[in-house]
Length: 271
Ligand SMILES: [Zn+2]
Ligand SMILES: [Zn+2]
Image (cartoon, rainbow, N blue to C red):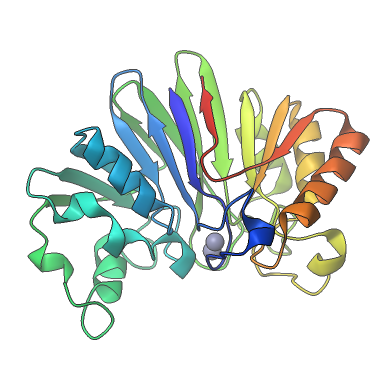
């Protein structure tokens, strides 16, 4: 499978010369299965560019999965060109524990917030509740409940014996968390790559307990405990410059002596 990151920023998009290298778009990742199926996770502002790329490649059968419905994970949806094209068939999966994907998107895409509403989209949109496990083409997707305010899920993608875990908006050591540290370790174990939220430093985290995000060192320790060889840090804080992100990644890389890098918009990886 092919993985491409289209949005790696947390909370709100940023556009400054200090954040250009890692990018300023909010969460969106693209997966293309060997079977040709297209799977998108989240519709942060990164989905705008993805939409243009899919249109120019003539791809019109799509799957979009939501981890949760916080603003930074769905704000790009009204600017996703394929939904305005008649030939597009899109299946949207989302958690239904608090609100369905259909309702969450409809609340965002309605007047006076946006001039077009969901019901008038010319594309064929099908909504499905996100289950614990699903299969799309040749890719199997397992999910786990993250520790985050509002119901949020992390994902493990597996195809042909290769796998990666994408877990954003997750506080690994949350007090009274929905999922224990050991459960996270077991979920991640055996994957080839972990992409995990590390929005804060340990110092900043002290003032952000319960906000649903992790620190660089917590996530590096998690990767170490799972035995995973490769870690990618994502959901960069909107106030973190490229320099700041790289300095923090360098520190944990030195301590844990494994392949750790910071996610960046546009980065690709084949499995
Ligand atoms: Zn987020
Ligand atoms: Zn969130």
